[in-house]
Length: 270
Image (cartoon, helix red, strand yellow):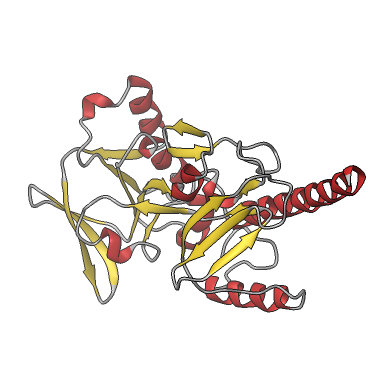
């Protein structure tokens, strides 16, 4: 855990355990299962407007939904990257930069954000190498190259063949030409793949961005489907845990108000 006041350095599993213990006090039923389908039935003001189908075959009826399905990090197909991801292959300078400061950094070019990533991590180390991998040097603009030079970032063309690991630690990067560059940390910008299939089945409007396709939402997370909210990485690739918690809170508050108004309107109309 990083960037969450009072929880810095906490293991994610511990954070989840504490959260589950806390919400259990409020009569919440926690179900460990996979949602395989969601359908909408008629009027959004009715109880049981949505039917949620679970992997074990159970169905749950709900008046409102919050979709917090997150995203999947699609990593470059370089041997060693997936195996070391989250250890010494990292993705976010704000999440991990302080912990590995002053180490020799590498940045594996994997998309449009790679130059920006190399510039950002140069604030935590003065020994940074940008490996262009499958990106041609001609694809970098003059401004990119000038900024990289000003930040002291070395630019190395050539495809990366594999990561080198000794004693369970990253030690270097081997290029396809056989050359080896000693590095103890490698940054990479994964391709975010949002898990939006349930939202798409419900007919939510989606927004195509350079970093994935996400649902169109209002400030509370309400999608274009009445009664359906989304939160966390389901609505944006840069949502950290603290953002996801805040988004979930906003959605919950909006749903409480929405249900209240629906019940009052039903009482008024009889």
